[in-house]
Length: 370
Image 1 (cartoon, one colour):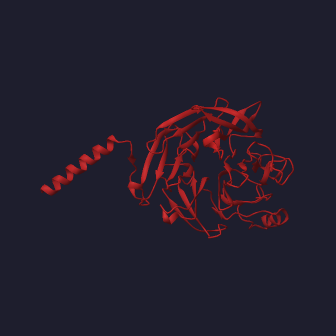
Image 2 (cartoon, helix red, strand yellow):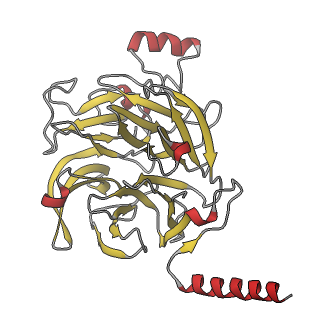
């Protein structure tokens, strides 16, 4: 009896001490993920959109209402925050994608995409500088991009080539035909030099368009020289695509693979690139995307980790050795935190994700299986 009394006392003491510390452990989910490897980093967020692991080993976050924050991943402390006054949040629009310059630690430069009003609802890509614990705009790289309350994209990525390039996704802004119009900036992957100029080897001289025929891409990552994007389907066929130069991805004529008679004809005539994964006869609202290849979670090595809004889950898409196909998939954390928006991976192999539930009820969570 004394043994059980001591055990009960130990449990009470442990529970009290844990309630006093900042490290909050999430309960075990229905998927059985170990409770001691899931940690609530930050709560009371409002529609976070982008999270990235900064070059200063902090998490940088955008929230759709216009706020940029720098968060200490160890304890969730906000060590810096600022708002961009020009941002106009409308439906799915607002402050969206963000990426840091390769030399961020020395030049403080980073890039953001946001929606604003100028006679109509539009989108722009702006280079900012972080210095002396404040931010200031440096250069508007591109503006007057069509926007809407839906389908605005927009993820950013900078590759690691010897001469890096900046990539940006745009949605069709609820104007489907523009996705096929290479003279429109809607429904595209765009490519820039880091100063905003157009690379000489882009497909169309003087144009930022890199690929076209997209509906609404809200995930973008490059791994081993291959660029992957997650894209929302209408009511069927969410997609994961490999993005290639000057390729057509079919929207609005093609949903997912080229498998109907009309799609087959269109794909053959228009050099359409088919997805490496699709959701089939329904949608799960695919969103943030990252690549995982760390030994911390061996089962996730050589995988795309993709979040979903409608399905409220993390999807692991295991890649083939060459990275060109998805060979298996697993679903984790379904409905545990609600709608999931974005994901990033630290150099130590810890995975961070944020929710998209609104009402100051959103959270930032760390996953680090021992």
